[in-house]
Image (cartoon, rainbow, N blue to C red; front, side, top):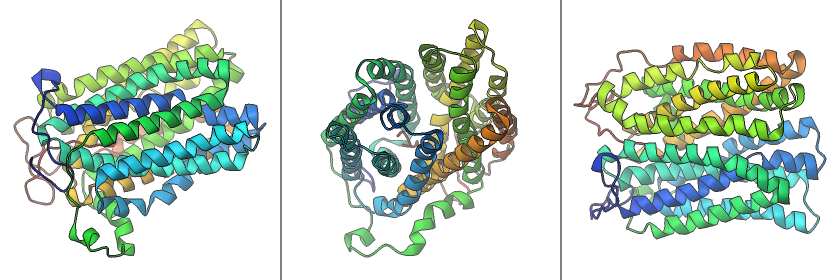
Length: 447
């Protein structure tokens, strides 16, 4: 078995993928673990705000703080985790982060059963889970890069994206039904169990993994400069820098609009909760379509062109949401807009994930993915808080329209036509911006 700085490559590869491609038993187990965790997370969707409102009688300010502060503080806590993950075996880190998330989430139903649950605990749990999510994604990206050969990684990332789409489509409606029958605390417990099962699945992946780097083996302390190595790499790369800025802007503006859409549809337009869940769950089939098209379109048009076109198209859908009206016409408008947005994201995300690893050395993958996740999480938190204030001053429609208008400008942040690399036989880059040969590999930012 060949060994890398990440995981040993799977020599026995019986699991057949698209186009007859075989990704192996170890990837199959990793994929199954990811699917269990993804469905558990989707099942819990919206549970913390509901607990804050229904159980703790929290006000709008506390609910907004729970959404924004948990993500922002979790991102800050995760900053030193990048170097820590980089110089350790990745699979044990993934197992540990799953167990941390499981324990943190289980504390919520335990405290509820004892009558001790408070808002501070919800906030602390959301911070711990957010930080563990970032560390898990960093470790899983580096692990996937070592597990599979370069030509298989776009297929793997597309499968993770498709799994996310199906989980997002099925999880929230099912979670809503469970919450209606048993209360929101039950879905938190179910998500905790899913992380436990994910840890067991990742442990079952097996194989050997080299300790990545002499510095870690020697047990030397982390230097302060290493905290910013991921950002130095992202901001110093002429294609990663604009893609990162684009991701921060697009993800932040889309996520900042989500709570405003809930206010507009449920409070102002009188949508029933099941209608609200339906108009956001059904369009997730677009994520399946986009992820299945990714490999075929990259092979035909090239990675850079697919990123530019899909990145441009995903910015064009949100503005019409500001004009939604009550009734069937309003539902139809939201369904069409969300389907278009999710389809473009389902195509863009796995290609971006693949491109990101293509432009990252194996020795800095975890730090780069951590920096990326920290930056996007912080951007989402800041924009969510800012748009909440804007909605208070102007109303949800105006704030949603402002986000849609700004999204139309985000394609300007995408890289230009000349990405500075020599093309491979399928349109991907084979010569990177550092002036030496790189493999066309995929990412693992699938948390």
